[in-house]
Image (cartoon, rainbow, N blue to C red; front, side):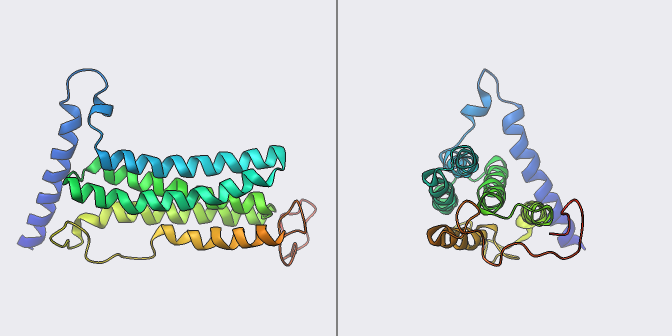
Length: 211
């Protein structure tokens, strides 16, 4: 019991220390001045995810596959930034609570929202499809929230990296993006030959909610 209480106390002290560095900053642009190099790398991950979503929207407007291929490519670029941000933080010895939160939010955009929007754009557009895609995003949201809540309890090596990872990392959703890219290459998208297996009806409904 004593050791668990000490661990919780140390975690609380670390969080309070991390928050105080932003609360006690004088002057203008304090948020920008508190950014570290690793935080900027993480933001580029979020930028790639955001650009993927906007490229998907532009494809819907123009029906130009150049924008669809861009939307499929940007999450991969986000993965590269996600790979390097932790290494930059350990190299610079500048890991922070802000960086941890930024990482989760950027991952949710690049590997949660962006793949779901891509799936919708390519052809998963029925009512049930949108429910499944919304649940897909929420699963990623819950996964990242749990990671943030438990990461302090996971043992670290000498470099400060977690010795193991609980659950399935959210960047694994790039497997879905890879499948969608294959379908796009084959023309198995809504604007061309349609998605494989077409529309399956689970129950009859005038509103199409069973499709």
